Amino acid sequence: DQPRSRGLGDVYKRQTYTLTFNRSESSFKENVSLEAPGGASGRSWGRSNGQGSIYKNVQDRKMIEDVEQFSKRFLVTEEMEQPKWELGTETKKIGQYTCYKATMTKEDTSIDWGSMFGRGRNNTAKKDSTKTDAKESAPKKRILSITAWYTPQVPVSAGPDTYWGLPGLILELSAGRTTMLCTEITINPDDAIAIKTPTKGKKVNSCLLYTSPSPRDRG
Image (cartoon, rainbow, N blue to C red; front, side, top):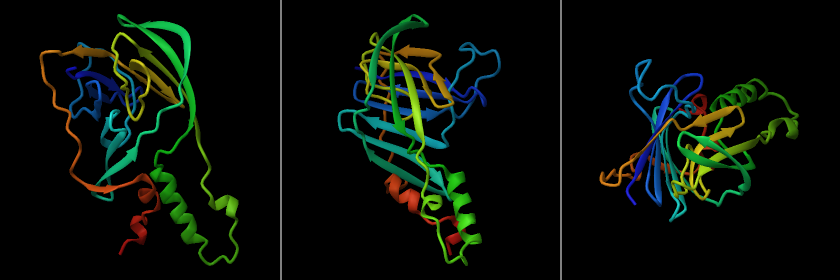
C-alpha cells in the first residue's frame, strides 16, 4: 500500500511531472527542475496546467487543486464524481505493462483565464450598448474526447491531472489536443512517501473562481 511515483512531461514544452500515489490518495505536481537533455528517462510527454498540484482522495471523493492567480494562492475543492468511462478490449504494451483502452466524453470545465480576460475587455468596450445578445454572452460548452490506457498490473485508481476512476493506473491519456504518457514507474514498497493534503491558500470552489472579478475590476 505504499505510494509509487512516476514522471510526466509536456510534448511541446518538455515539462515533467510526478504522480505520487497509494491506494486511496494521489498528488500530481510539476517538477521544479527539468532533466538535462539525454537524461536516463528520455523524453516524457504531458502538459502544464499552471497549477501547483492536484490532490485526489478516491476514498473520500475529494479533489483539491492548488492554483495561483492574481498573485494569490487558492485551494479549489471539488467533490469527485465517478467518471463515466467506457471500457474496451483493445490492449497495447507501455513499457513492461499491458494496458487496456477506455474512452469517454465530457464537458471541459477547466478555467480558461485568457478567455475570461478577453470577455472582460469586450464587456468594457460594449458597456454603453443598450442591447445584449444572450447567445453571444453565454460561454460556449467545450466537449473533450478522452482516451486512456490503464494497467491492472498496478491496481490503483489513479492518473495524471484530474483523471482517475479506472481499475488500474492510467499510463497514457489523450484529452483533446493534449497527450500525457508515463515514462517511468518506481515501485517503493519499503519507502514511505508522504502525500500531503494542500492546506496553504484560500479555500474556494471552481464556480467562485469563474465569477471572481478580473484584476481590472479590483480596486
